[in-house]
Image 1 (cartoon, rainbow, N blue to C red):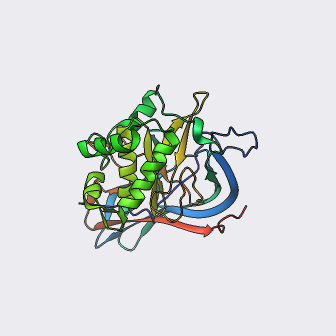
Image 2: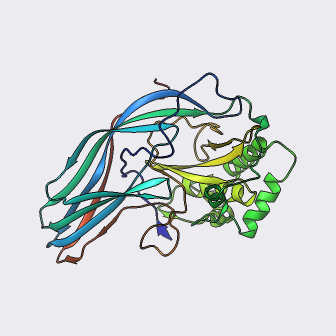
Image 3: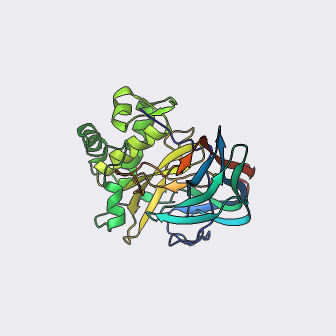
Length: 326
């Protein structure tokens, strides 16, 4: 079993990307498109703190994931705090869905810390389901980026025979695509008992056990959608994971729709959430890793060390709105 990524302590920064700035709310939004509503501003402090125990370390390099903008969020840097012993901070974009911050510290002695803390203002929308999803359908033509969301990922075994069988049972019929995917959503919530575990397991194991938490339940939803030819992916926010699925409207325009697979209520096609999105995806190609990674996680290395280098991943809200505040 592999330990989970501790998403309660994470980090993010502002980068404007091809995803574009946060979309504007408009009454002219098509009836079969997502709706961005209830805008709010929240402030977070995020960053990294490095130390060494029992000696010193040289050539220290630490990395952590930094999310990009998405239609439902826009991020502005309010302040940066970089300690004097940090010699370099650089950034690398990974798969268009997350950026990796790379911190270099030439020397770190016992009792000393290296620190990078960023204060961010996050403009965030709730996502509401389309008013009329009946015209939505499965995509028939996909570009390379979207085809990647049909491939197996770590712990998301979309080609397993059990997953294929479940997809055929729940997603192979004449009902509208939205109704079929919602049926899968309901089936997982009815048949997989939510139970948190420090160790992550595959979606096939969760299906066999009938037990899982937000990661396993999301993985099972994603794998089954992919087995039926519906692109799907994981979304990572502090302390939680949920899935998105992709359908096209009557004009052939594609849309990503979220759902709260492990939560109270029936949030299908909507996401009433103000926590920042850290990354989207579950199949990242990372330098030094031989196989695709489920998520971009922090790393810490040192060329030479007489002590033990330590990394603290900082993520703390400064202000958070109450549900429904605008």
